[in-house]
Length: 256
Image (cartoon, rainbow, N blue to C red; front, side):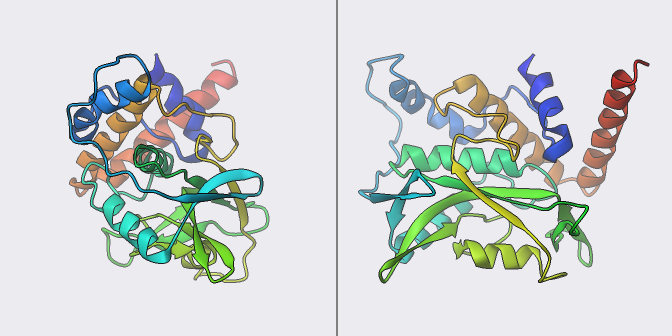
């Protein structure tokens, strides 16, 4: 049932698909997750993620980890190296990527936030970036999301975004926004910081990172996108499926 409900809930945002297969990385972390969830008292036998001793502060009332810029860049590199997360398939799946990165950060003892960038299409064009796999083409988003940590810069704490799908390194939120608005630098963008448990832009889905069924569903979706990223028609096929599902939902709403 979860494989059907989640895509329908997110369809009008940036829909994804759920699947059952665990990615190889999640399999290696299975005993760690069960240990954290207090379902077993057996110590983790797989390699435990390296924990980082960090300070914390609050941003708009929510707690987040504070680190140096050097540590933030190291963290970014570690996240980017996760081969099971299809950062190259940026046409869809930002919720899944942000969730999985946040989960991995929490396993390291790091508390991230999330930042949602969105537009009101009555006032602004969509966010845009060059398509990473198709030269000369772009990817447009109504909203986009990625994890955030706080970086100490002198006496200030600056939110830095972890988004390997869009950036080559960890960057301040202002730079992240600028990357998506180069086609219209003065366009209005709504930025919203939330706890990492917030899954979608509307805030209607909040997740428990110890919920293995939900994690399994997200990892299955990422695995599907990884496969699609290797298919020259993968993006086009996904959009066709999304539009077909949207038409079906409209027909249901209209009583057909």
